[in-house]
Image (tube, rainbow, N blue to C red; front, side):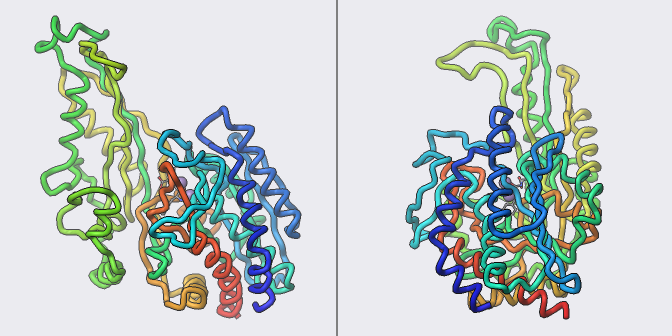
Length: 462
Ligand code: BES
Ligand code: MN
Ligand code: MN
């Protein structure tokens, strides 16, 4: 490990420059106009893999964006780590809220990152974090200290639901065979309190359309007698939570896992500072399901949120109109043992049932995903614990996250492999938002923690 750590130190400046090159490619998977850029990012990663000595590097086309695959099998008797990550990014909008252009990476200091942070779309989610694995591999490989076999599978469609990755896994079970899937695409609690993510929420995402009259109407001439679909949609949405902020869809909570008091205690043992949390977000009060702490509300409890709502006139000035249609995009974060198909169906039935006869509603399901949890009494988890303890100087706590990486549940189902979510970002790094960033501290500690993971995993599997 000594040579590896020395190599990392000596080359860290170049690593940053390389990452900047990758961050300059606007690989926005949701936007067809950027399909060429997405492909260019895939090629960039493949080239980088070849340069660092990964074997069998391929850019594999799918019906969507390509998957980059490569591997290094050094010892068939050694355990195999499959590294998963994604090189696609969220759209950078709204552009005017960025302090520097999203695809021109720069380093700036912040209160939370006094050492500096890399600002760019994808800096944290997930180019910056995925890249750590390439460079950790480079360091281990060039130092002749590669304890495990390594396989890389880096996809370009995570941010749009990983639509083609499931099929790829099913068709390539043998190729992807591994002992553990290692992923850096989540956060730690804070730089002082390292954590390993032991749970991800599932997702059910729907779009609703509410239609009133068959055309836009004069809101004076017709207003008062004819249902306004925006008013109706607002009323329907408001009814989806009760006064305890529980979701009112019948059957919604039926299968929700009852988390043990012991695990709840463990989850709440991180030093969560509610005042700092509110201050960071600029809110005077929080609002969540009664009976649960914010940590629990964002990890072990399911939610329902409107992500966007539109209809009618939203241009300059005032136009008096009673619109024909109203729309909303609604997501539900799911916890074990809810399933996205079931919840989507419950939502659809309920939403159609509560619609007044004055409107028609259509519910269109989007992508979904299942929740995932990781046990902590396994060599896979313990290797992460020991690795972080080495680099952070503190044993990490297990913490469930509120975000979703739907493919994790699929890895378990299709490959029979558990994932270890060894992320290094912070929740405050503004992923999916303007001014996304990744701390230099986090970048550097991630680079060091990954080789230790490989080291301890090999030891623990002996
Ligand atoms: N890396 C995130 C998920 C994440 C972020 C998990 C922080 C834990 C902590 C991932 O790229 C993501 O954004 N997932 C989407 C779901 C996907 C289907 C679009 C999400 O959670 O909204
Ligand atoms: Mn991600
Ligand atoms: Mn994301």
